[in-house]
Image (cartoon, rainbow, N blue to C red; front, top):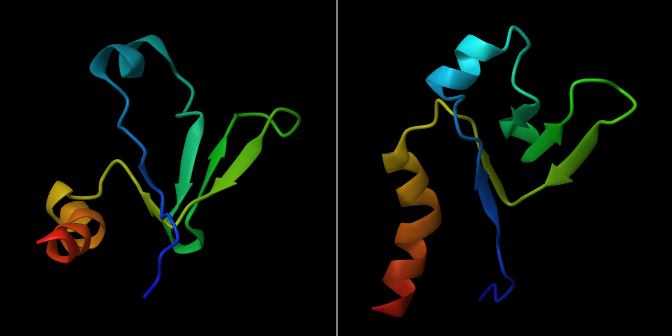
Length: 77
């Protein structure tokens, strides 16, 4: 049994206001295959973070629930 804590992240989509006020892309990039996000637009101020799961703004809530929540719920009950 795997007892380590697992962490997942979902990158939220830009709000309508953010989309209208900015011509630049989102400063957060989700690399789903690498389970990593990259934060920052320029190379000098860019940071990457790794997670057990990484979901883009386009990821459906149902699939996130099935992969992250349902296994935990099934272990509890």
